[in-house]
Length: 285
Image (cartoon, rainbow, N blue to C red; front, side):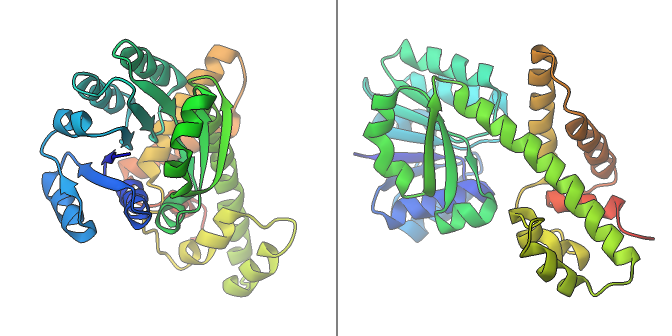
C-alpha cells in the first residue's frame, strides 16, 4: 500500500515523519516545493512536483491543509488522476459541508473519502499521539487503520462523512473555553503576586488540571508564545463553529468572545503566535 502526504505545515510534518518511521510513506507534496524536497531527502521518499502525479501513484492520500477552499482544490486535483479504489484521508479542520462536498467529488471517480481531523497539537503530531475523529464508511476505516495508528493514540469512528469534522468543531469550542479559563485564572494568580510555576504545578495536579494548562501555562506566563496551534487558525475554526451553531440555533458565547479577542490580537500582529497569546489581553499591566 503506497501512501502519499499533501500539506507539510506544523502538523503535517510530524504526521509524515511518523508515517515514514512506520515504513508507510512513499511520497510527499507541499505548495512550497522546497519544504517537500527537504523532507523527502530526510525521510528517503519521493517529493512530487504536483498533486495529480502523486495521486496517480498512491493507494492512500492524506491531506492536511489550512482552509475549506484549499481542501476542495486539493481534492479536485486528486480526483483527476487517483486510482479507482484509492482512499483519501483529509486531516484538515474544515466544515462538515466541505467534507461532504469532497466525498461526493471523489465518489464520482470511484475513490473513497474519510474526514479525519485531529487533536493533540504539534506535540501530538510529532509524538504520534494524536486523537483522530473519523467520518465515513467503517470498512474504509478498517482498510486504512494501520496508517492512522502510525500517527495516533486514539481513533474514534464517529459516523458518516462530515461527522468527524462536526466532532472537531466540538473540540474547538472546548479549546476556546479552556483558553479563556486558563488565561483568566493565571492572570488572576499573577495579580496576587504568587510564584507562577509553583501555582501551575499545584493546580495542574488537581480538578482544574488540563492539557492546555500543562503544556502552555508556564510558557505563556513567561511571555513565550511559540505556535503549537496558531491563533489565526483557531480563529478560522471558530468562525466555522459559529456558522454551525447559528444554523443549529445554539448559543456559543465563549467562542464568540474568543473570536473577538483573537481579532484584536490578529490586528496587533499576533495571529501567527500560539493561541495562548490570549494571555496578552489578560495579564496584569
